[in-house]
Length: 482
Ligand SMILES: [Fe+2]
Ligand SMILES: [Fe+2]
Image 1 (cartoon, protein in one colour):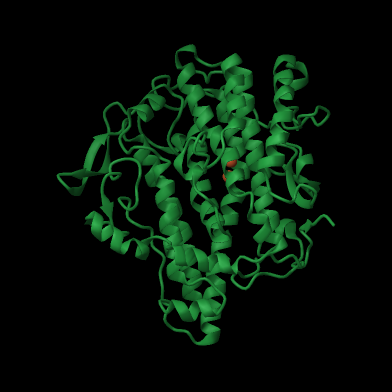
Image 2 (spheres, helix red, strand yellow):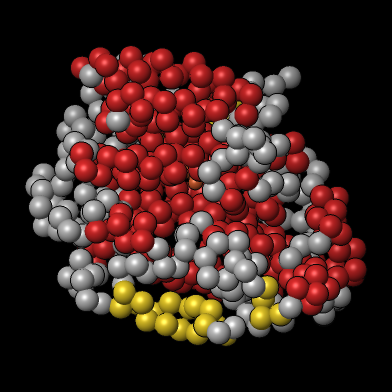
C-alpha cells in the first residue's frame, strides 16, 4: 500500500493528505474543529452522545479494506479527511477543457462557480444530521439505531471533506463559508439550509428510510457528477465519499424492504386480501402499502426538486467549465462537449406536458435526473418483488415528474400522481390521496416506539437478513449509557 492509501492517525484529524506538512490548512482545520464538535453535540443525535455505538470508521482508502468496526462514543468518532488515491496523468473527461491535465489548483476564472458547488454539496451533509437527530428515541431496534448513527457520523465526515476543500483551496472566503456551514440550521426560518428537501422534517422512521433511499440517492448522483470534475481534489474527495454513501442507500432500501415484507406477511397471516383495507391492515400493527406509496410520492418529488431546473444555464456553465460532469461521464460515447447534441425534456407547452428536444448542454440537470429515476426504479422493482413473493397484489410506482413540484417546469401547476394536470380546487380535494395526510402521519407516529432489547424489532418492521459486519441477530449494536 502506498502512503496515499494509508491514513495518518497521529494527528487530531486523521487524513491521507499529509496535513502535518500543510501547517496552514492544519491550523485552519484545528480552528474549525471545536465549532464542529459543538455543532455535533447540540445538533447531532439527541440523547445518545454517551452511548457506545458499533460504528464503521474509514481507516484507509483501499477499496479492499477501508473500514474498521468498533464501539465508539459518537463525539469521539475519528472524522477524517480522505481522498481517493491520486491518479497519475488523469485528464479532464468533459467540457471545454476536455483532454487537458486535471487541475491540481483552482482555476482562477472558475473560482466562484466552484466554491458555490462545494458549498451547496457541503450544506446538505450537516442538514441531514439535523433532520434525523430525534430518531434514536423511536428506533425500532438497536440494529436500526446503529444504522441511523452510522449515517449521521458519515454525513459529519462528508462535511469535513467539503470543509477541507474550502479551507485548502479557497483562502479567506473558504474559511468564512466553512463557518457558515456550522451556522445554518435545517428548517430554521431565519438561517435555513440551502436546499428545500433538507429543510423538511424527518418525523418518523418511514420518512428516514425514504429519505436515505431517495434523497441520499440524489446525493449519490451529485457526487457522481462532481467525481468527474476537472478540479482533481474535488473529484478525489467525492470518489471516496461515494464509498460511504452506498451504505446510506442500503439502509433506505432495506429499511423499506423490511417494512414492506412485515406488512405483507402480517396481511397474509391474518387473511387480509385487500391492501386498500387500510383500517384492517393498520389494526395488525403494520404500515399499509398505500400509505407507503404516499410517503414515496412525497420523498421522490422533494428529491426531484434537488436536481434544479430541467433547462439550466448554470448547469450548462458548470459542464462547459469542466467542473461538474454527467453520471458515468467516461462511459458515455460522445464528444463530451455537447456542442451539437440535443436531449429530450418534458416541458409545459400551452398547458400540456410535451417532450421537447433541448440543447444537451442546457439539459444536463434533466439527464442526471433521468439517470436518478432509473436508479430509483430498480429499488422499487425489488420492493415489488417482495410483495409478489408474499403473494399480495399491489405495486409501488414512481409518481409522474409533474407531481408536487416546487422547482422547474412544473412548479406553477398542480398535477395528480399520474401526471394529469388538475385545477387548484381538485388538488385541494384530492391531495390526501397522493400525499401523506395528517391522519397517516399520526398513525405512523403511533407505531414509533423505541425497542432496545438486542435482537428484538418493533411490530412494523422485519429483522434484516444479515447483520452489520456479519454480526449475529442478537448483537448489541448500541450500548446505551446507564
Ligand atoms: Fe453525504
Ligand atoms: Fe448520505
